[in-house]
Amino acid sequence: MDARHESLLQSLPPVLNRDTRLLILGSFPGVASLRATQYYAHPRNQFWPILGRLLGHALQEMPYADRIQCLRKHRIGLWDIYASCVRPGSLDASIRDATPNDLEGLRSLAPSLRLVVHNGAESARRMKEIQALGIPALRLPSTSPANARIDLETKLARWRVALAEAGVLPDPS
Figure 1 (cartoon, rainbow, N blue to C red):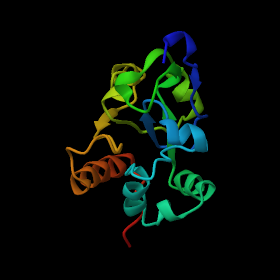
Figure 2 (cartoon, rainbow, N blue to C red; figure 1 turned 180 degrees about the vertical axis):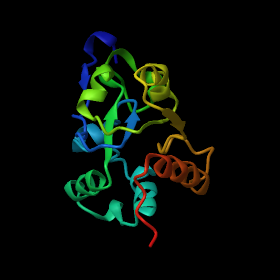
Figure 3 (cartoon, rainbow, N blue to C red; figure 1 turned 30 degrees about the vertical axis):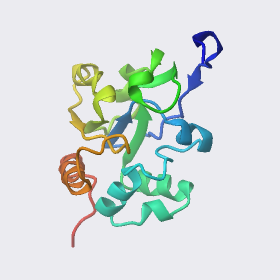
Figure 4 (cartoon, rainbow, N blue to C red; figure 1 turned 90 degrees about the vertical axis):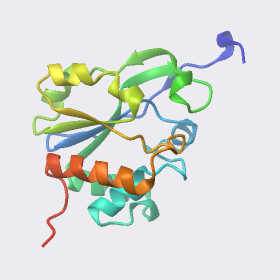
């Protein structure tokens, strides 16, 4: 498709509030997520299974509103680094003409924020901006189905460490 005919896509609103301790930043919603207006809607994305196992809930089996409620209960937020872009398909490598989300306001939006995790390499390009705000940040392996070189158990272990560091894992007792 000719670039003149490609639409500027708009991201999803943040799932974020004053109690958020951990913010998970993706790059930009994929085609399935934009169609569903839901974060991580592609059925092969490992996001919901990973978070579900770590939080002790079958998130992937819940209605989306209940998933979001569960994340809020555990003080976890979701957002993307780009507010809008042109992107044919869902690959981060295809993102063009991106407008970043305003990350400078994170401290006022989420004063309890302890950690930002970047879900993949494209999101991690803005890690220095987060760190400049005095917020610790980590890059985690992408949960995207395009990231097949790292197995689920390795991803799960890396995500577990991050959630523990942010203090959002359920109490094991």
